[in-house]
Image (cartoon, rainbow, N blue to C red; front, side):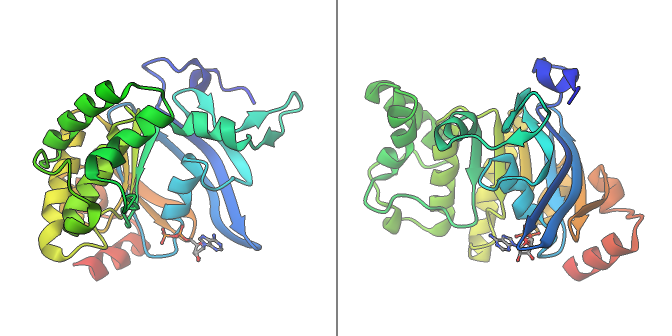
Length: 264
Ligand code: ADP
C-alpha cells in the first residue's frame, strides 16, 4: 500500500496513522472502517456509548487485538507485516513486544504485580525488557514517582495503596519505558469519585508536558479542558470529531447530542 508519509516517521507525519481499520468478533463487526490520525503531542479523547468500539480500537493500536482490515502505523512503523502482494500478516509475539515497547497503556484495572513493591513494579519492564541497569531504572522510577506525587511510596505494596495511588503507579510504570504514545482506557472509571481528580491531574500534567495521548474516558471536564480533539464514536464508526468546544459544545449529529445529554 502506497503511504510514504506514514512510513517516513518524520516529525511532520502523524504519530498514529490508522486507515480503514476493521475488526469483528464472531461475525459482529465492532470497528467498521476507522480512520484516525493523531499528531505528535496531540491529546485525543475518544467518547462514545458503551460497546461503540473505543476499547477495541485502543487494543488494536497496541496489537492486543489483531485487525481484520486496514492498516495502523505508529511513528511510521506498520503494526503488522505486509507481504509483497500487499496482504497484512500478524507478527510473532516477540515482534509485537518490540513494537509495543514504545506504547504505554493504562487500563481501568491497574494490574500491578501484587507481590512486588511500587518500585519493583516500575523497574520490572525497563530492567527485564530493555536491559536498563537496576541503578538507572531505580533513579528514573524515583523521578517518575515524584512526577505522579508518590515519592514517599517506593517501598509500599499495591494493597497498601488507594485505587487512585495504584493507578498513578500504573501510569509511572508505563512511563518508565519512555513511550512515544500513551493509551488510556477509562483510567478513572473503577475509582471512588474522590480519587478521580488525582489521576486526572497526573494525566493533565503529562499532556501539558507534550505526551501524545489517546484517552477513552467519560470525564467530560477532562475532555473539555485537556483534549485537543474529541472523537465521538458510535457503533464502530467515527460519527464526528473536532475541538471539544465544537463536539461537546455544539455537536452536529443527533447521536452525539443524545450521548451528551445522557452524560450531563
Ligand atoms: P467500548 O469500549 O466502546 O465500550 P468495546 O470496544 O469494549 O466498546 O466493545 C465493542 C463491542 O465488541 C461490544 O459489543 C463488545 O461486546 C464486543 N467485544 C469486545 N471485545 C470482545 C471479545 N474479545 N470477544 C467478543 N466480543 C468482544
